[in-house]
Image 1 (cartoon, one colour):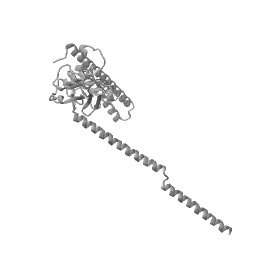
Image 2: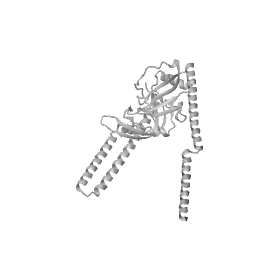
Image 3: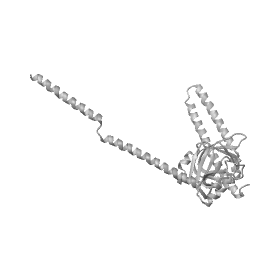
Image 4: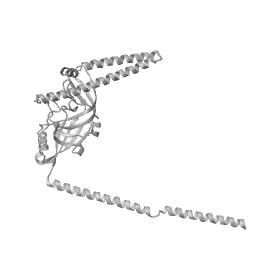
Length: 338
């Protein structure tokens, strides 16, 4: 099963154009870095004093030139750039990259969830991205390193969307109905679903039947690097993402290891009564703790208001010392006068 031809073409061209821009930027950065390194080595060679040091610098310059030639050759042989040149430049669009596949892929299918009849769906839980796994796009592939979402999670207002469609909003991080966490496995999220909402019920039913079992995300402002190996597709390694726009379940995820599931909770009268009773006990325990803390504080204030025994004893010792001193002085004067 494939997407409609015009949709598939637009999605493919958009991803290819974004990847080609990223590769061109990496090519320019690497070229500038090697050129600057060669200039630095040449300056050091010009002022080198010993013959051994000059030999070392000449060898380093030769290695630099070899690396530069290999880098240019690898970029020129890149299938991604060749495809982009063959098809011509693609319009930038909105500049946002979305990780959905254009054709169906084999996804791991779990057992259908059977507890829907006895419980109420409260949340969606899933992984929008997995670290150290690959998304294959034909001419190139992509992987995400751990820590790549740290910057985006601090600054982005992220929505949970169904199939990247802003008409199907399930939650939002700004009001905490969507909660995102970067774990050791990937980008994890939880969404609080609206009760008795048609959209949430529609999405939940499809996830329950496993018609939808993967997730995707959209992003921009990427820091990445590229690796070229003979006989393998060009590999893009994403090390940091500056802006995250949305996550959520999709029909065709680009990263096949992503997942989504429903979280249920029983809604029986006994459970509700137990929770009310538990909340009452929790509130009473809190009140006892507050009363105890207040009593201890009042006791301490009381002790502060009363004169300390040590202060009274010190004053008494000082008074006796003064009296003894006066008595000795009087005795001394009486002796002199006599």
